[in-house]
Image (cartoon, rainbow, N blue to C red; front, side, top):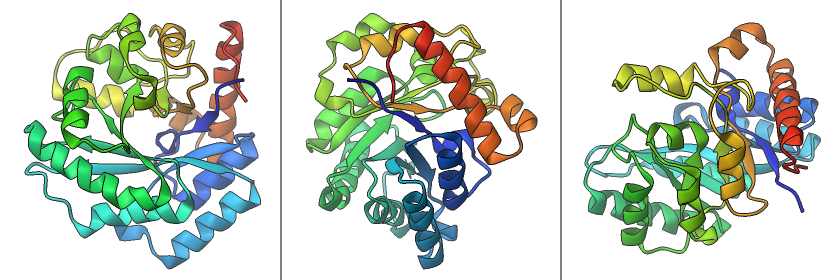
Length: 267
């Protein structure tokens, strides 16, 4: 058995889902994820994306991002993202929250899970320092309150480090809570301001092995063969590889070399 290696939408943030699918397939990925922008998602976008997925025989690991707003009220746009995941056959929906009250976030998460149930999608809550949910403990409390079998936890190696967690903590988690994980490398430390955390997340990531995060240790502490979503949201890679397929190929090659070095099998 081996890990799935998927191309995360965040590696190609300026491209639309159809373009991401073509880039992923051209680069040799068998799995990918998409960012759905409700104002740009229509029947034509769905047809084009489904055709690109079929052309390259891809599986859709996740669709993002459902951002629960402060107050916890969901809108038609949130449901449109869930519906896109259903239409594309995605395995997971990525969710973050700006609502500081765990109860209200849990209510919203439960509703998202209900919407996702027809497609057997997992609804994965991600913690990060630029949202109201900033740690594993906070995310787990919300998931527990949501009380829905579709609710899940998403670990991102960068946000995991910024929250001050250590790989050994992951071994205490139930495997059923972790349907997939996002991986990248980056700087070991970051200034503790919103602006610094934001830049860190959207511009300063790097491929595994190019930074100083304990990426291999984190992967090894997670459930065996957990799918790996390659989230290389990097200004340096965007500048060096403006072409989507070339960027996807570059991050795939660098990441495969690192994973091979640490005897982490992927397919």
